[in-house]
Amino acid sequence: MIAAAKLPRELLPWNAGKKINAAEVQGDAFLFDVCMAGLHLAGGAGEGLGGYTIMDDSDAEIRKHLNAVRHARGRVLKTGLGFGVFVRMCLEKPEVEHLDVVEIDADIIEHFGAEFSGNPRVTIHHADAFEFDPAGRRWHLGWHDIYCEGNDGLADLHARLILKFAPFCDLQGAWNFPRWAKRYPGII
Image 1 (cartoon, rainbow, N blue to C red):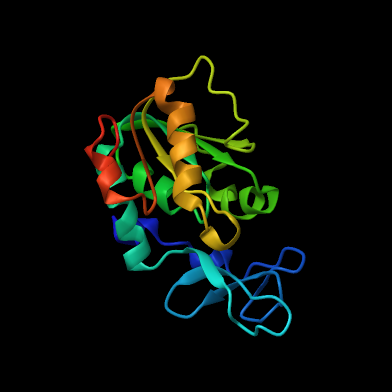
Image 2 (image 1 turned 45 degrees about the horizontal axis):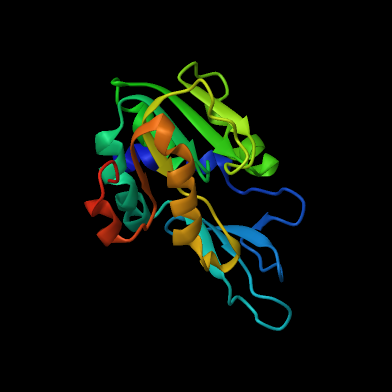
């Protein structure tokens, strides 16, 4: 499952505007490929490489999705495409009928969503997850893995998504969501 989740290396290097592979870009993003693929935001002016990683396909990162993948079946909602790690893992499971992926960043969709464009089991919606209209849809699982500046308040944003989609999902969870939250019904 972990091998299936890895970002296809033919997608590297990624060059979309100021986003480039293996180079520092102050205040913007770049991909690097050392032992994994990662999207890293560099710090502001004078901060060098500071900043933080917002996406990667390291084994440790992939493991954070395994419990959700274990619960995935039927129709699945995924907020945030990222590198497509979660989508790839779900597609390995025949019991996953369809994935609806909501991604706000057109560059991410264009580059990392392209491999899923011909797959009838995947629909990528270019939208803000907070504005996406779930009316008329039902999912067995909703899995939330979005990005916010500095990741400050990420748990709060994921909680807002869980509340928004609660009437439409049997189960939900979020990347790096607090363990204590899992004691509530419907949270994995």
